[in-house]
Amino acid sequence: MKYLFGNWKMYLTHQESVVLASHLSGRSFHEQSLCVAVFPMMLSFLEVDKQLHQSAIKRGVQNIAWTPQGAYTGAISAHMVKDVGASYALVGHSERRYIFGETNEDIRKKIDAALEAQLIPVVCIGETATDKAENKTEYRLKKQLMKALEGLSLQDNQLIIAYEPVWAISQGGSGKPCPPLVAEERHAWIKEEIKQYTKAAIPVLYGGSVNPGNMLSYMSCTDIDGVLVGSASTTVENMVAMIEAADKL
Ligand code: PGA
Image 1 (tube, helix red, strand yellow):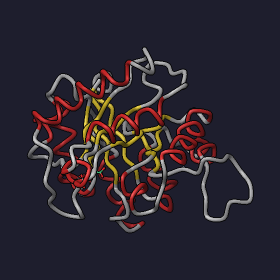
Image 2: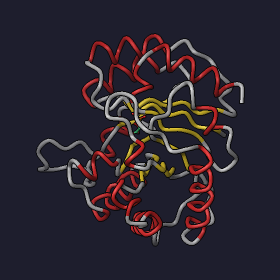
Image 3: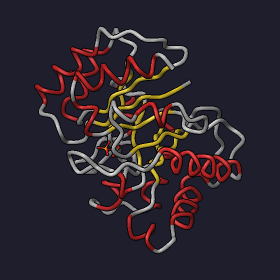
């Protein structure tokens, strides 16, 4: 199974999100070999879900709270999003870690909450430019993986890892993607690391400046199970091109 996930971040208005979803709703692809999901902003989730309900495209959210219910102003729980149709939740995206200050501990609580609500967490890990410059990439990834996975009892495909080097993520436009060969080596290393924690099959996706022009160079690598696309996933043209290309793999 290959994965093509589109994280719309905070790029689109409500109206734009709904229009994009409605244009995608008629797309068909081989669902046995390709899993496509979009992650709209929370305000648009219900309407996007409605547009895609009959389609093969699944829906996820960009963030969840770690507690199920109660006096938590501004928070939305894993149970709540599961209840309205979400299949996936991004957890620990680098923008949540580095802009909103989420720690490995917060992220672990969110992973536990997602699993408890039967939502598949897409756990994002990745080294920053500073980590890379200081040769701390493996240290960073080991730590993030350990905090995320230690002690979990997982079944196949119950959790997904997205390797997103922070330096490769675009800032609303063109970014500096990680060369596919480097990404592939890193994925192989991550898969070995994961084996310390679980025997379950855990898909590992690549994210960071993926677009229709470079997507296949990642997707066609054996150790890369798919891609998590940010800014390039916010137009119909790009999404359709990526779905069509991924479907031919
Ligand atoms: P990008 O974002 O494709 O815009 O670089 C990827 C991500 O942050 O998931």
